[in-house]
Amino acid sequence: MAPGDPREKGEGGSGGVAEEERRTHGYAVAGLNALSAMGEGIRSEWGLSPRDDAIETLTEAIREDRLGVPRVLVLDALVKLAHRRPKEIASGGPRLDALLLALVEDAGVPAEHQARAVDTVKRALDSVARRSVLAPARHPWKRFANDVKSALGLTQAEVEKPLCNDRQVVKKAGVDAIGVTVDFDTDAAPAQMTVCDPTRWHECTAAFHEMQPWGGAGAVDQQRPNGWRRDLIEKVDFLPGRPPLETPLRFTYSIDDPPDPAWIHLDYVLIEETKEIAVDEGSIDVRRAQSGRTRVSTKKLIGFKDEMLASWPTVACDTFWSDLVVNAAVGCLGGGAQEPDLKEDGGTAFMADPRQKQLSEVIEEAAEAARESIGVYTELAKQAASQLSGAGAADNAAWVQLTTKASSRALADAAKSWTIYSEMLAALAESPTPASGSTESSPTPEPPSDTPDGSPHG
Image 1 (spheres, rainbow, N blue to C red):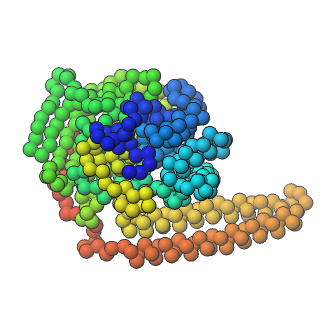
Image 2 (cartoon, one colour; image 1 turned 180 degrees about the vertical axis):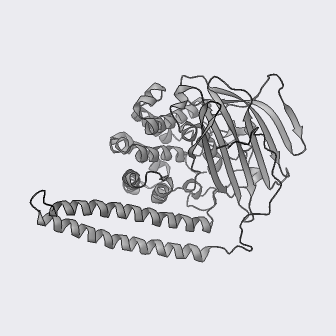
Image 3 (cartoon, helix red, strand yellow; image 1 turned 120 degrees about the horizontal axis):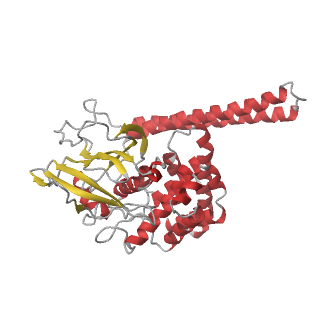
């Protein structure tokens, strides 16, 4: 089991970690995410811990081996902070150093190599901060994770953790609803993935409470030949000192073949608006591909009426939804499932690493390297030009230094380009050739959707 994995030995949750403690750790992560997304004002208004207090809470939990959230959520919160608010990482000081050391120690790094490992993680965070200016739209997790994979002993499941996309905005029910999508591949069979069953969400994360039946007029509770449809109350607790969000939802759960299904599908829609929420609908689809791996696709459309919730546009991605999906992806298969081997040497893991995806990522890295290189050259050119402009006396020594720096950068970038080119060739050499131009399985009948008007889920 990977360090920081929140799977329970018996009934869900983190072994030996009480639910309230797990929730406290989730609040600490939410505090860092709120700070990165909206700044100090929103963090304070929501009653979340200040940056240093959140960091200390997580550090203590890791040192005591009681972290109730996956460590990738802690790392992702630091990456988001570096990407969105670089100064918060730069001013982290000894507390941030202590957190990074705790993560390194928890990864089992020998004492004599810990200082170097901490430095590797710090430099990777600094690199995220620098790149945020050149490529602000790109999610920085993947490159960061690859940079620290050895230092922290990240599994491939952790490197390939799902990334949440919340860029879509849909006007519905009088609010700006946010479309949230998360897609990932896993080596777990569809039957092992409990993420489609909302009655088991509480097993994966302390943010969700156990579902309770909704008792309103016309409530539905139907058993079907290949699934069920039920009206349940979703209860999400993700802010300290604030009542949980209680949302009545109609869930339709469909499964292909219960012993060994090829697909499992969940649709859900809001039964009636609440004080906080005007729109809440979506779907989760788990489907086996021809390769034998499983594709998980989640879509969510959520619109908040509550002004505080609406003021944090990334709230679903940064808190309860990512918590649930990431937990499912990095190992929470449910309390009753057998624990697969999550080797810390990057061996067997849930998340798939198909060669086609590897090639795509190498090409993306090449594109980002080109953007970064252009940005550096542009800045150097501006500085060199200013030395030769008529605005003041030219500093010949400075001009020579700048042109030399540009030449050195060109050589370094050429070497990096050759490395990326070699990686592309390796990825191509290892890519399996599709038999018929497609890696997907034959189409299977789509389960019914309950979305009333066909609007986007996210």
